Image (cartoon, rainbow, N blue to C red):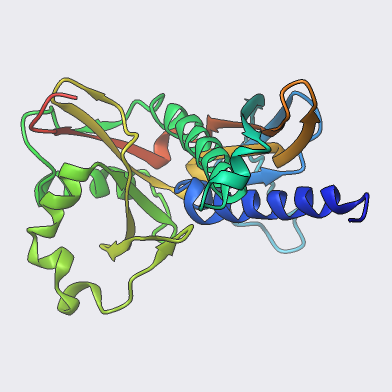
Length: 275
């Protein structure tokens, strides 16, 4: 056997990790503003204010908008997910242990990515509802009204992330499930099924904040949250002779931050059950 066969193993494993991370790891990364290849411990997202158009006299100087630039710093944090794969165990199992560990590591890092994004969302202050009702049509329209009042663009990049019970509540609305209102197209968000309604892409997520029966959901524009990546998911595999096993380590460096509080609305819903 070639002495470099282990390199093939490493490359295949790393490819599996990246594939699993993209397909089944994170739901929310593609729904927000993302910056990759960050060098250093932090990066800055620019929040730019509104411009005002003015008139000018003939041959006069064009008026300057003097756009306000507000830098928003996003700190990166390092995360790891690893496990042991015993050499002899691989001979005794009828499952692809490499693929199992690759998927588990990718899913763990994907959940951490979404956790960072949801933590950033949770710092928003605008809200509708009071936790006394489920996710109703009136509550949704109130949230959309807040976004419209704040001049948030209705450009197809509005998203909503909701819990399981809220998803079921939406399924009871004819407007949400009927093709007469939403059409036949079902969008995919990072490989997950979503639905498009009211110009919003609706995403189901199990990791939203909950306290007792109080569930927080969010409707937001993609540019209101920033995600920064210093290192994509990276895999390291090392042989430990004293353990007769490979240690497989997955790591990443990422962060998330709220950029524009005016572009996100917290929807306070009753979850109907304790967490």
